Amino acid sequence: MKKIAFIVQRYGVEVNGGAEYLCRILAERLVGTYDVDVLTSCALEYITWANYYPADTTTINGVRVHRFATEYERQAKDHLQYETERKLKKWSRPEEWQGFGFLKMWGRALVGKTVRRFGLRWAQHQGPYTPDLITYLKHNHRQYDALIFITYLYYPTIAGLNIAPKKSIFIPTAHDELPIYLPVFPAVFHKPKAILFLTPAEKRFVHKQFHNEAIYNDVLGIGIETTDVVSPTPVATLLHTDAPYVIYIGRIDKAKCCDMLFDYFIQYKETHPSPLKLVLVGQAFMPIPDHADILPAGFVDEDVKVSLLKGAKALIIPSQYESLSMVTLESFAYGIPVLANEQCEVLKDHITSSQGGLLFTDYPSFENAVQQLLSQDTATMGENGRTYVKQNYTWDKVLTRFAKAVNYVSGNP
Image 1 (spheres, rainbow, N blue to C red):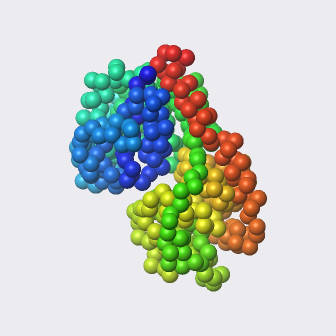
Image 2: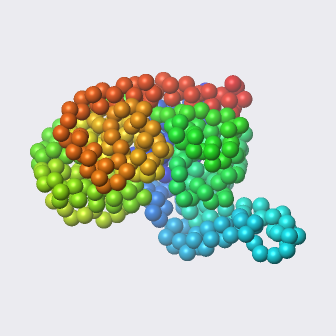
């Protein structure tokens, strides 16, 4: 049995994050096929990376998890991160330096080392800064047939990919956002032996940005399954109302454009008075408006989440930055239409390919889409979504692609 290790910034049943959740369900699915380890931080949240879990080894749903302490919290180093980012951008653009031609050439000769130095410093401030995890990898990577790094943005991936790149698989969960344009990342995206993307849209974006098509790559996707297990408490009791509702599921954060969602929904209710509610499921990292028709449910158990999703008129995903959006696929699987931000290429691909929902670009298109979802029969959309998931996001396809990548990096194609 091959031994593999997932390296991810946070891990645990309480961790509320797309890439982290993807890592957990993939690791749990692979137990029995591989000897699976997870190497991660002691952090529960990503704002400060404060140590929450003890720095030890534990087992979660059959997966062996090694936790390493973060050396410092991110907020305490914010000013250093911004200064490092400024210098990183400056030193990565020698063509903008002033001076004679030979001085520019001398600058170009030195810039590579400078960018690497400031790039590593930026990664340390970005966090979670877990030097003991990197030391563990240096001393123990030979015991693993493959190292799987999930998410491009954080220190464990940026530093860890340097250790054994020839046995490394990179699942970048990349999308078009500001940090990916920093000059630290071209080297990161050219380092691994294999890259697994979550969607064709992510693959297109990464290849256009980094021109790394020569690296072995595949579109992994993820397996989506439905469950018949629902909350024993009726939805009307959970929400204290039997009014119709749309739902948002995920991290409640400005980075997910939740502020825009709140603005659009409140404007919609002012224009179209009705009993319609907006239900929010997930951990809040921003203030939620005190509005009678916005109902925060918090972080809930899976059976409650499924019950709330199945009772919704539609799922709304306002984010501009997604590399997969598992909740969109879960909504499709349950036959619930999705209203998504057209500015996100991944969501646009999901909606246009499936015909399982609608897109919006601004308030008028949001308003029109909500009106359409509430006034028309959405059964055909629901069935389209189910078909899309069955054709593209099943575990047998995912595990076959994953096994091919592991065999490739372990020298057993």
